[in-house]
Every structure is written in C-alpha cells, then in structure tokens.
Amino acid sequence: MTLGSAITGEAIGIMLRHLLSGIQFLTIVPCGRTSTFDAGRTTPFFPVVGLVIGLLLATIDYAAAFFWERSAIAVIDVLVLVLISGALHLDGLADTADGLYGQRTPDRALEIMKDSRIGSIGMVAVTCCLAVKWAGLHGLQSDRFFWLLLVPAFARASILFGTRLLPYGRPNGTGHPFFQRPLRLVDFWGVLLLFSLALLLTGWHAALAAAAFALLVAAVLVYYRLKINCITGDMLGAMVEICEAGLFLFLSAIRGAI
Image 1: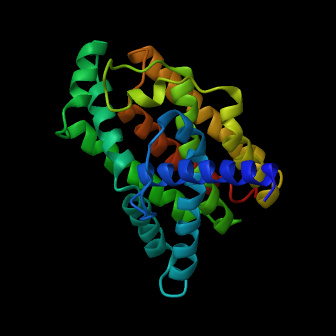
Image 2 (image 1 turned 120 degrees about the horizontal axis):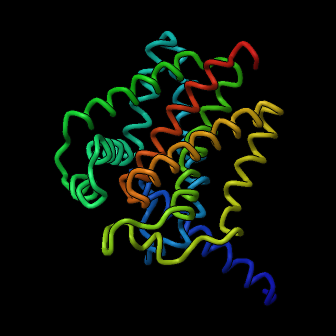
C-alpha cells in the first residue's frame, strides 16, 4: 500500500465517521457506534444525512403507491419523516413557537424554549406544519421521487446557514458545541453537492427550488434576528421543519409549470 492510498483511505474513514455521527444525531436510523462526536466537523455532512432520509422517504413512498391512494400515501410520508427524525425537529418547532410568540424579551423567550413542556401555541404550530407538509406531499406530482429525495436534504442544509449567520443564544446549551468552531466557506460543500444533484435530476427546476429555499431560510433568519438576535438548537429544528413543509408546498403549487 502506498502512502497516498493510505492517506486517502484514512480520509475516507474520517468522512464516514462524521457522516455516521450526523445520521445518529439527526435520525433514529441504526448505524453502529462512533467513538467520538465532533459537532463542528459533523455539521457539513447534514445535507448528506438529509439525502439518506430522502432516499428512505422516496423508497417508502414508491412502495406505498402499490397499495394506497395519494391522500393516504401523503399521510404515510408525513409519519415517515416524523419517525425517522424521532420528532426531534418538531419538538424544536413547538418550543420555538411557544418562546417567540408575542412580545417577550429575549431572556424570557429563551427561558420558555428551555421548558420541556409544550404550550398551546407550540401545539398549533406543530399541527399547522404537519398539515402544510401533508398538503404539499399530496399535491406533489412531477419528479416526485426526486423531490422526495432532495427536499429533506435542503431542509437539513438550512442548519448550516443558521449556525453560520446567527450567534448561539445560550452560554452552555446542548447546541453550544455546534457553534464553537465557525463554519468556513469550504464547509458548505454538502450544500453545493445538493444543488448539483438537484440540477442533474430535475434540470432548471432546481433553480426554482433553490430560490424558494433561499427565501425560506432568509425569512426565518431575519425573523429570528429581529425577535431575539440569536439562535438555539430548538430554533434550528424549527427552521428544518419550516423549510421542509414550505418546499413541499411550493413544489406542489407549481406542478403545472414543472
């Protein structure tokens, strides 16, 4: 074995460990155990983890089409997304909605989000999000398999922009390790890979999805900045859910054009 091949093999091994760490963090998919968890180096792999989720979703959706009508399949797809993530992001959405609702100070909003109990606003937010996601999945037609593969990846890619563009809101919160090492431009390689794959699979329609994704991420981050000028793990999870539901609804709304 040459030195070059040994280095290449070691690099691939490191990348695989970070990918498995990302899968373990964002999903309940069993994939063995990793010896260490490096949050800063795992984050760039989140779009790839989203592709893994999307592949599972698209495969189950394809199989379900042999047994059920589109409305029932959409329900199954929503349940699959909830189960694969262990409702991690929905929990964040509920806490974020409870904390940011109304005219509260940043400290009070962060205090409410830290409370594990869900309030009425959080329940409404989760219900609306699932309803929007169902509507989008029900109406999605053209390139359905490809968009089921890509949209969960776009949603997880939003985490990179959240951690890069807003400061962390807690001194010692569970999400703090993800902010200790600021993301560099090169760490967005997964986002570039995702856009390239979308372009390959869906052609110019990928530009529409990219524009919608950019608008959703920008809107959420601007809202966060205006409300409390920071971000937390719960708020990142909420952004994932908002982007996922919003993209599915957008793609189903323009089905006549694509």
